[in-house]
Image 1: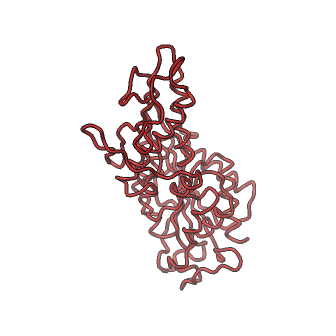
Image 2: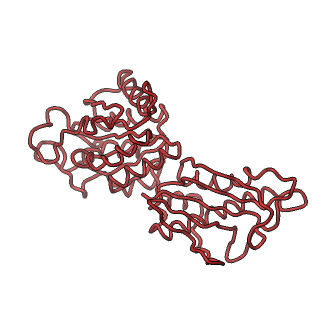
Length: 358
């Protein structure tokens, strides 16, 4: 059976079982997963990440937001690069799947470059580890994946954590008519020029960068607002970008003013203003992270709504910010929505956010 078909079956099954995010690190042996993602086998949120360590910790951050993420890596030392993130997920009791591509049994232990003994590499720090030889899609395969996902979520021990699914692929590693350079062991040479092209994987389907998702929504990052007091728009603190409160200003002018409620600002207008605040927060975070594509997701949102005494719909107003972040990153976040008597410049809404860095 072609390896790409196996990869499609695995990703489709994990999608059905509740996997929410995939971070894909390009590589030769993992190319079947890349083409499977391109074909739409996974309906969740997926993105390419060039550095395995960064992908691992981004996945840990996503797990902290309530997501169920997986990291896909190629064979060899690339798997070992995930060790720090796996240990972090284990200690923090966070669900995390490692999908490691591997050689089939007959090509292991032959002395070839990158022929690492990677099945079970994480030892006691993984809640479970399964080693899948090349196989046809079947109930047995789905059952193994289901048990692996359950272990990541804490069944039967009650302790969530990382799980490794090691997947052996035989040549051909690409769809018919696409060739990856041949290696000395009969497998595929880890030549970046021959790998599944990450650039194509970011242009359609769920496999989109935040900047591409922003463009799809018809949005552009605005210029970062100039601080009006003694603060900076955003800072980086231990791998998290924390923004100052952002108000709904477009081209230097507030778009919604006054307290929200009866005889005041309309709640729907305030919700739209919260979306503007979120876009301004994205711009502030991107300015210190080196670009929006260096942000892995949102951890926490705090929204303030200038409210009339009889207005209690603050949560609905701040949904404007949360919904935009969800559209761009596809992940959940913690949140507070607070009613206040007044806000700077008499605006109706203010939003601050915390973002994970890849």
